[in-house]
Every structure is written in structure tokens, then in C-alpha cells.
Length: 125
Length: 125
DNA sequence: CAAACATATGAACAATTGTTTAAATGGTCA
DNA sequence: TGACCATTTAAACAATTGTTCATATGTTTG
View 1 (cartoon, chains in turn orange, green, blue, red):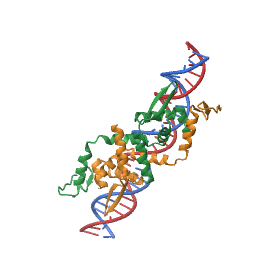
View 2 (cartoon, each protein chain N blue to C red):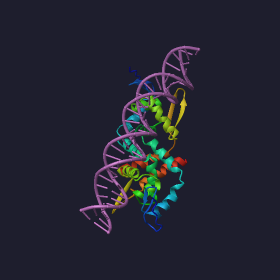
View 3 (spheres, chains in turn blue, brown, orange, purple):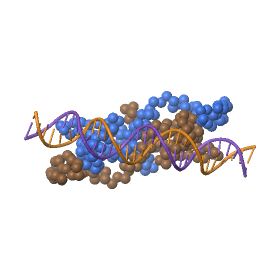
View 4 (cartoon, rainbow over the protein chains, first blue to last red):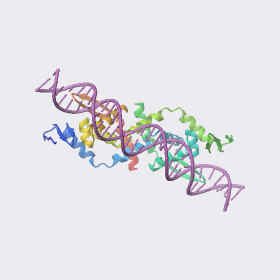
């Protein structure tokens, strides 16, 4: 069931979806259609959208630390921390270096905290 | 089982967690202990960490639109879009106004896209 | 080499989340 | 008022996710 009027701003029905503002939708559709970044941005925020990972980043902003330090600081299992650090590293939010048995983690770059600060400003409105 | 040495940077074991750098952990612990913002930041990113919601924000950055426009634009159900707009509104990322039967959504403020841009920069590194 | 230790990994489980379907608001207009 | 329409809402389901437990790496040191 396809009902179409070509005039500006008139209703159109296609694929069970109603369009009220055809011109706007068409224009915006063209602009955002071939943007690959959308998924990447969502994935990055997905990584940042976890209490444990935010606490890890916040802690590492203060100082480089090893896994067991972080585990104690957050009151969590070494395993849990290690799992989350892995996620943060895959998102290139943290980096690590090895010194003997101990692995030290730190923030990957300043970008991380820029994002953090923007979020903070939004919250404090 | 608690093994403690008070000297600097020596091992301590408490609550099944090993601390290698006691001084650092203690200092950082004090700094971040009473920060309430951590959960709020994580919650905000949690909202941003979804492909559909990011696409909605990206679209609304171009123009104010109604629910059915957005549904068509994203090729999704009106119900699904409405659900996600609700989440975005609760996070104060979008606002809406009613004009008769039609509800128009738009970005709440410029903060939203600042966060977005920072994320984008991190990705493009 | 073997024991000790810091960290990483895999499987499993509970909890959370996004979409669908169906039905309910809330508004307009004949 | 009553039919119609845009939107919202509730319940249900599948899919994803964070933590735990157990085990495996990899490094140091006796």
C-alpha cells in the first residue's frame, strides 16, 4: 500500500512508515546515508558506558597502575579488572607496558579525558 | 589472611587482593573516593552507546523532525523510535515540542554534539 | 628446573537491554 | 461526538553484557 504525493511537505506512505516532511527527510537522508562513523562512535560510547570502566579510566587519570592495584582500589576481582582492561585496550583508551611480572596500565592519550570532561559538563548542565 | 608491611611500595595482601604500590593506591583512593559523578558519566555514555540513538542524534543535528520522519529515515518502527527518543529525552539529550498531533524532536543543546565530536576525533585518531 | 606470583583467558550464569507486537493516549477534524 | 491519526506505553522475547570460577600464560627467583 503505497500512497504518494510529490508536492512539498505532504504525506507519503511507504514500507508501513509515514513521512510528514518529505523534503527534510530526503535531504537529511542524503547527508547521513554514507557516514561510516556512526557505528564506530556508538561502539566507543558503548565501551565508556560502564561504571567499572569509567572508574578504571578515572583512576588511571591520576596515575599509572598495575592490575592488582586497580583490583584493590575498586574492590573487585583481578579477573574482572583484567577483563575490563582488555575491553578498554581494544578501544585504544588505555595502553600497557610490562615490567617483569607486573603489567602497568595508563591512559592511551589526552583524548580520553577530553571526552570525559565533555560528558561531565553535560551532567553538571 | 592479612600480610602487611608498612614500608613504601611493598606488598600487602587484604581481602584477597594484592597491592603492589601501596602509596599510589592510597593517594588515588582518597582523590576518587567521594566523587559522585562517576555513575552519572557512565549512565550518560550508556545512553550514547547505541547505534540507533546515535543515528537519531546525528539526524536531529541536521534538522528537527517528527517521530514518523525519523522512523522512515532510519527504516525502523515508530514504536522503536519512540522508545529510544524517550531514553534520549530522559538523558536530556533531546527535547520535544507538540504541534497538533505531531511531536517534533530536536537536540537539547550544543553539548550533545561536542561530546559527539570528541568521540569522532578519538576514532579518527 | 620447579615453585611462586601477576596477569590473562574461557566457559557459564545472571542481569540488562533493544525491538516487536498489541493496545492505549491524546489530538484533530468532519 | 466519532473516526482517524501520530505517538506513547506495556509486556514479552531474543540478544548482549559483566562478573565469577577455574584454568592457562608468562616471568622471576630459589
